[in-house]
Each structure stands twice: as C-alpha cells, then as structure tokens.
Length: 337
Ligand code: UT7
Image 1 (cartoon, rainbow, N blue to C red):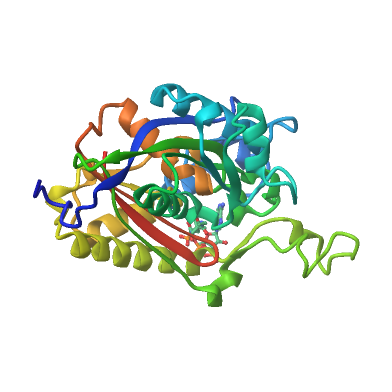
Image 2: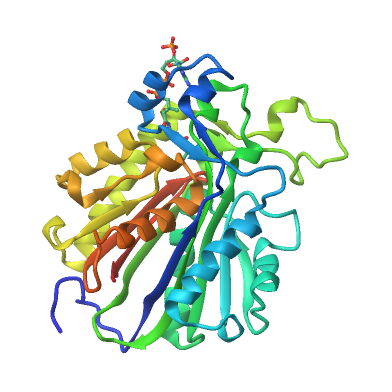
C-alpha cells in the first residue's frame, strides 16, 4: 500500500481502462512544405524534430477524429457508449461555434446518457480534462468518463507563414476512466495553472466576440493562429520543469520512480531540454512529434496510446502527463497506469 506515489490514498480512484487514438490518413512531409514556403527539411528537423504531420482533408472534421479515437478507447474498456456518463472534448478547433464538439461526438457514439461539453485550454486541454474527471470520479459523482483531445489545427494554420505552418498537425486521442476502489492504480495527483497575461504569445483572434464575423477584420491573417515562437519556447521549458518538479515533490517521488513522462509534443528540443534539466534519462521522455507534429490537445493521449501499444508502459507503471499551451495554460497528471 505504500508504493511511491500513493501517499495520498483515496478510497476510490479514476483508473484508465481504455485508450485509443486516430490520425487522418493524409500525410504532409517537410519536403512538401519546402515547396510551399521558404524552408527546408533540414531546418524543420533540427529546430523542431518534426518530419511529417497528418492533415485532414476538407471533409474531415474534429468530431470525426474524436469519434474514431473514442470508439477505440471504449472498445478496449469494454464499455458501451450508452453507459457513458460524461464526455469532455478538449479542443481549440471545434466542429463549429456551437453546439459543442462533444455534442457531435455524443450523437456519433449514441452515448445518450452522457453529460457532455468542450474544454478550451489549448494544448493543456487534455490534462485539464483528466484533472476534472479525477475529481468527479473520486467524489462518486460519476462512475465513468471519456476524455478526448481532438484537433484540426491545420484548418487554422497559415500555410504562407513559415514560422508556424511547419509545426502543426491533426489528430485525436481518447481515454476512458472508471471509478474503482483504490487498488493502487489510477490518477494520483493533478496540478493545473493558467496565466492570461501572456495571451498574445499564442492566439487566433477571429471570430470571437472581439472580432465577430460580420465585421471586416483589421488583418485577414487573424483567421489563423499567430505564435511568438521564441517566447513560447522559453515559457514552455520553464513551466514544464516547474510543474514536473512540483508533482514529484507533492507525491514524494523521484525521477527513478517514473516509468515515462508523456509530454505535449510542441517541439522535440523543448521536451528534451526540460528532460535534461530534470535529469530524466532520454528513454523516460516519450517523443513522437517526428511523425505527427504539434497536435495540441490531442498530443498527450496520442503519445500515451502509442507508448502503451509499443509496450513502453505497462499496468502498474507510474507515468506523468504534462502539457503547456496557449492561454498560457499548463499542468500535469501523475498516474499509476
Ligand atoms: O504548443 C505550443 C505551440 N508551439 C509553439 O508555439 C512553438 C514554440 N516555439 C518553437 O518551437 C520554436 O521557437 C520555433 C520552431 C517556432 C522556431 O525555432 P527557433 O529556434 O526559436 O527559431 P527563431 O524563431 O529564433 O528563428 C531563427 C531563424 C530566423 O531567421 P533570422 O532572423 O535568424 O534570419 C527565422 O526567420 O529561423 C528563421 N525561420 C525559418 N527558417 C527556415 C523561422 N521559421 C523558419 C522556417 N524555415 N520554417
């Protein structure tokens, strides 16, 4: 009972019982991007670690990707959609302004009983979602939950801006969590943070209430994501290190106890640099940005799913999810799988 990381025993925990991910079939390579903007495979690879990204066609939408990932997670959990009690879709590229993407996913799955909503915390959306359902499941408000991170960022990417268009891809990842008596597995600890002072470093300004669609935009590029890469880079390394140190400290853990850190994939150099500062050996820091690029809220569940399928994480292992993104927002979940 006193395994590391279980110092805060709770009678019930939110246990991950299923996981799945989905990326659209179409792939965009660095070489193809180099024909669209002034860049090169060499620059993109050395500065970001990205080689390819999966991109949606015009007909593929966020709810479609989310539904596919959800079906896989539900099948693995052996949970029927009609028994689902809550669905959270973390996204900043929703199906439409309203209704929520989660309502479309509920309809697609036939999850009639579920209470559903979207969560807009950019790249941190999935870890925020895990933190929310952790509270609900521990408290007994729900018995199960589906948390999805799903994005179609390439639909708000300016493919004329070489500083941003090389970074992003489309995907979805999902996990089912169930309320189970404490048998040492489950979400152990979550910590979340936000700082709106830095909203300008990463944003997409059209078409919210500040710039509604009927009003002409000051600049037509406001329909696209705008990033201040250097500022994001520095903040990201700092916040990821801070939040991981806080998690280890709070749970009475050291890096030796952790099997894998699953970080939001924003740039391989950011992840590696944070890992080095924490003295984490490279094999404990999972990276799959080379194939998918930055998929915002989808990236942590996508990486987690791949890690489990590759046998890099097994039941009983301690893993940490960590994310950082627009807002600014950042946070982490410590989980015994
Ligand atoms: O999940 C959160 C969202 N993610 C982010 O916001 C990304 C965080 N930031 C980053 O990943 C990095 O800052 C970038 C990959 C965006 C940029 O890498 P960097 O090492 O910070 O480069 P930089 O912005 O300092 O630019 C270095 C040079 C500049 O040229 P000069 O001024 O030195 O002549 C840029 O114009 O690289 C140039 N550059 C490029 N060159 C070739 C910028 N983008 C490209 C490009 N290809 N795609």
